[in-house]
Image (cartoon, rainbow, N blue to C red; front, side, top):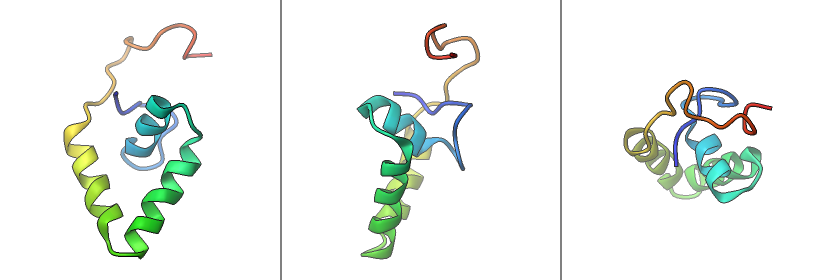
Length: 67
């Protein structure tokens, strides 16, 4: 799992997690927002994800992903 440099809104946590899970990034972003609104854990999980999940280095994505 990596945080992509393209297709990210803020730090790429939701985009990276969505790519890993095979779902649309909007679904993951809405999940983070709902968790943040109902208890505040969404913000904490997002920050932890930004610290733990490495950023995708240029050139490490496959040619199929760049299309």
